Amino acid sequence: MSVDDTREFIIDCLSDPANTEKQAALGQWLQQSAANRTLYAELKQVWDAAANMPPAPFNMEEGWQALSREISDPSAHVVELKREIASSTREEAPGVTAPFLGAEGELTNPAGKETVLHPDKGKTALIRYKWMAAACLPLFLIASYFIWHSTLQPITIQANGIKTITLPDGSTIRLQPGTILEYDPSFLQRRVSLTQGEAYFSISPDEKRTFIVQLPRSTVTVLGTSFNVNVSGTTEEVVVEYGKVRLTTHTDTLILTKGLAAQVSGAGKLLQPRLSFTNEEAGTVATALSEYYQVNITLPDSTFRKKKITANFQNMSASEVQQVLNAILEQ
Image 1 (cartoon, rainbow, N blue to C red):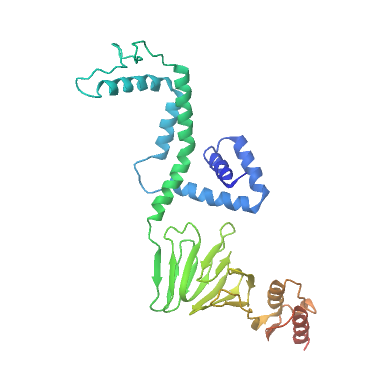
Image 2: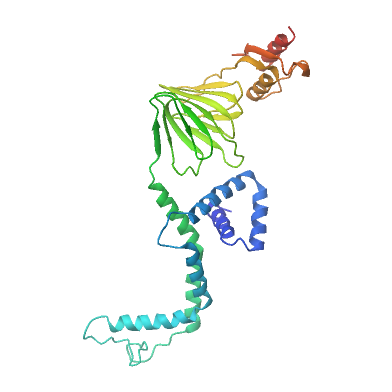
């Protein structure tokens, strides 16, 4: 399916939760890939938000009920349609006789012959239009929500001193003086923008929604972790205290785990990560190094996992790292 077809399929399923066939098809589609589940979660979030929009002239539930009544009895609207046309033709201009209107209000052709309205065709057309309106209503609600949402101004925080804020999802950010942070007040997407300064992030875990920190030249993506970000001049630095983050630039992607740090240059290039550990458990060090080098860095013996070590593995190959780690632990 194309992207548009996929979205229509999801909206169709959301608008008809009682339809077992649609829900079964949706369940099978969701099992096909994580990308499908992510797209569904995003659209459902907007769908739910649209149902909870601020008070507006349109009542969604009443609208659906009225629409259902109209669909179930289209014949009444055929009669009303004839009356409205006849009435509007009569009132077109004072003192002017409408040439297409008969004595009883029936529509006639220019030769005076009565024009025959076909009720079946009228009903079919009206039903088609009403179902088109029903299909478009969810899209209208979503579009209306986004229009309303776009009028909201982002929240901008400029810290004059050390300041700690709590986001709607429970995550906390400690801002250093001079730091500028921005985020959307609705927080539908877990995303903040840090344009300058330094901040420490403690992110609430959420398996369904990643947390994104947008920097001037790179992007930090996390699930649940604590890390520090420093934007100073043209350099950006990310230091992970625990957990795991993905640092992405225009050209590179790097996974950082506990104890690892990386810098991004003014040109948006990923610099050599800082592989330094201070009084850290050997098991944690081995895991972090394995993530970075994409090979299995092992310990000489499992009894060394809790042993605390301090070491710098900068500018080493994976094999050199393994040798140095073994030497430190076997001292």
